[in-house]
Structures are given as C-alpha cells and as structure tokens.
Length: 186
Image 1 (spheres, rainbow, N blue to C red):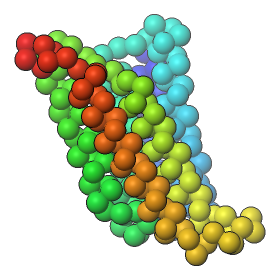
Image 2 (image 1 turned 60 degrees about the horizontal axis):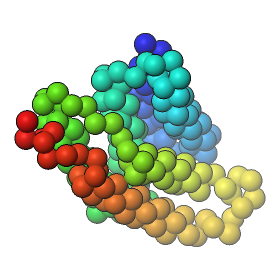
Image 3 (image 1 turned 120 degrees about the vertical axis):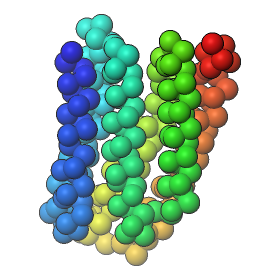
Image 4 (image 1 turned 30 degrees about the vertical axis):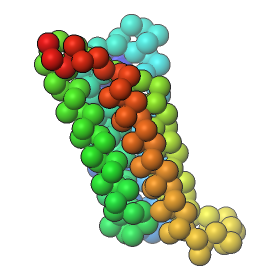
C-alpha cells in the first residue's frame, strides 16, 4: 500500500533528521528543518492517500502514530539535551504517548483498532509546528532577525510546555471519549 510506504519513509527520515540536527551548524540545522518539514508533510500525505484510495489498514493505524511519536521524541530528546526544552515537559509528553499506546495495544488485542481522534491530530499538529519553530529560532539571525535571539531558550521552553499541555488534553480526551470500556474489557 502506498500510504504505508510513505509512513515507512517518515521512519527512515528520522535518523537523517537527527544526524543533521546534532551537527549543530546553521546549514545542518537548516537541513534538519527541511527534513523535519518533509517528514511532517508525509504525515498529511499518507493520511490523504489512505482515505482517498481506501488504503486505510490496521498496520497504517498503528505505524502512522508510531512514526509521529518517534519523530517528535527524537527532536524533543535533542532539544532537552541542548537545554532548549524542559525535561519535565518531555517526560509528560512521553508518559502520555506510552499510556495511550499501551491502551491501544490492549484494545487491539481485543480486536479493535482505535485511530487518532481530533484532539490527537491537533496535538500532533501543535507538536510539529512547535518543533519547526524551535528548529527555526537559531536560524533567524541568518536572515537578520536578531531581536529574538536572547529569548530562544525561553521561547523553546514555552513551546515545550504548550506541547505538554496539549498532550495531556488529548490523552484525557482519548481515554474519556475515544474508547469505550467494553473495548478494553472484552
């Protein structure tokens, strides 16, 4: 299926994204930003293709959010190591993802695959946009925008907390509205 191949491509892009991000120079950060944007666009593309051409599969419902999580975790782990994002915010995001993934596995073992709802998709969009902003911040001086440079760490931390807040909100929404108790206790 084409949609699943695109999702796998997103997984393949993650090590390249990390390689360039960890180099830390303006050009390599720019390349990592381009790779991240490309990976984010594949998320929209595989979803569009899956729906338009009826290529939605259980594998895709599992691989797609997994690819999203790995891409986001990779970026946030590096940002946290670089002291750009708060480790507690990263912890909250990881706990949310592990909790929801665990519940999805239990539900899938009972024969039901629950895809992402609106709040989960919104959470992912906010995460992708925030990470792109964090990646772009150190590059702004290249185009002459130096006024935000002293605030890069502050802005990055605020964005990490926004991601954490939306992670919690979407996690609670998923647990309260996305599942029914019968799917867990079958």
